[in-house]
Image (cartoon, rainbow over all chains, first blue to last red):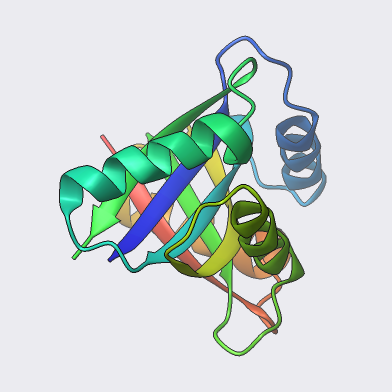
Length: 80
Length: 80
């Protein structure tokens, strides 16, 4: 089973990477971008086949390692 | 309109961040992870309201700035 974890900074947390992208897009004459925010995505290939167990396992990984829950929020998506 | 760009390393390109995550998960006694790959996600808030034009604009941004198309592939997803 494949799991996709999307980690974004929480609303209100300053996102310098996103700001840098905004400035770079403006410098390249791309208008019409009001805001850019950057996050990360982690794709995991799991041996677990049970959906509920896989979700629990990945949630545990996010809490302990993958995300900094003080400033980041995460979403877990399971694929087949 | 909101656009979400997902950028991942192409298959076959070495992913040191993914490897580091694999090792860290193993060190924390998380078994059953065969592979981990890390990518980035960029959320853009666009003023453009036409779907086709927005897709064309974001594709152009990816080709020129957001993705390194030699080693990375990107997916564009539009929301509302």
